[in-house]
Length: 494
Length: 101
Image 1 (tube, each protein chain N blue to C red):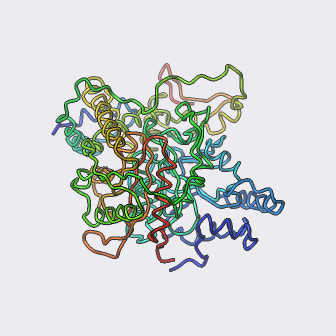
Image 2 (image 1 turned 45 degrees about the vertical axis):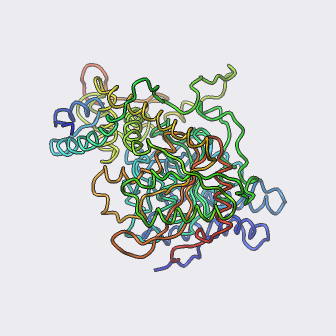
Image 3 (image 1 turned 90 degrees about the vertical axis):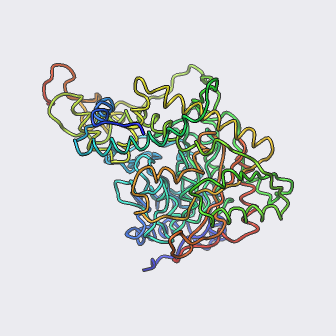
């Protein structure tokens, strides 16, 4: 059942082939689109392939390169972006019926930067509707599937981006991470995924779910590839008032392979949380030992409020979602359902038809926790717990530069394993704290393990969290680990 | 576990402008009840005197120079509207209760 078109290589491989004249950008875009189409029935990773325009842009990149005028390392390289990041002239639906037919009149700032760098966006990627989910099962286009085992979830919500990179359709992709939506699918698909510091990448043009928590993140087959993609999109943007004024990290230039003297915190209390698979914890600790043998120091730290993270996160995220999604009212864009009566009836009919079950559940929970009489007990309480969790990180980061823990408590799960909403929420236990605290974090492959209940081996993700603004330090350690190991080179059967 | 009734769900759904049928309301009542039961975990934490975190970045409002820039053209602004008249969004009657024309 393998696709006829060979998988695409890493960014550095493709860059070298382009620069040596061994391949053209047009050929790469053709291959990405062909492979995406051949694997569509199996993985449902891509949405809205933009063949004609992508090939035109690739041809222009070929002309630039021939003249010695390539704009960046991404010039002429095909990539894909999550369906909640808008691109001018292209559909953007966040995998929701309520945005069916929407065509964006503008570029997200991250997209504008990618285009200025010469990158060729070939398609959008499948996702959980409005990024609400950890499985990519909640998509109006049907679930994306894991290239290691199509019976299992690629994770979510950026599951289409992760599956597209893992399956060798594209070398790089953009996702968004509100509570782990880049890192968890990266872990489950055996690739590298980075959530930068909050505010590092502009959110302008990212369809909003939970504004105080989310940001655009990067997928690649290595930390070095994620660094190159981050360098292209990071930096202050006047169009996003939460965008950081500090200059971006220039992460690619800081990948020295040196971890000597680096202090890596091991939170033993967190590793003992219920639900964490012993095999996953063992791989993560083995990975920390690899970095220790290369000169890093492992230190014990505690994050005592991590066990409250899921509860605080789902109160804050749903509250923000209920407010952000109020804009989908059938007036300015997307679906309008017709109902007898006036404007209120039209809005109710539109939202009832347009939103899927998980989105309705979260909007209703968010409305409940913000409603009169409950605001202090739920929403305000969660915000105070968020402060306690931030203090945990401040204390821990006084003793170390990075913290290591699993990304996901388990390897890729079967779609039927998360029958109720709460069990899917609990899968985010290790990822939501970085969003609540706004710190940078990366997931990278650190081995394989058999799922509980048996089956063939599946990828395990190591998560490294850094101090605020220290995106480059996170990427440097991840890159150093990948220079020492080969876990990131393992690929699913073609 | 906090009990959420069908009527609670209906009240919230009205606020959120989402319609729910009886069967859906019962299922949602169970699911929201389970979630609110789970978050009771937070009640074991003493948070008195702890400042709430609304955002991890300093809250100062960034200002830009007061220089006009090009807005979205009116025809582009309405290009995604399900119903438009010229450069205006068309909506069903807001007052008076007449059906949508």
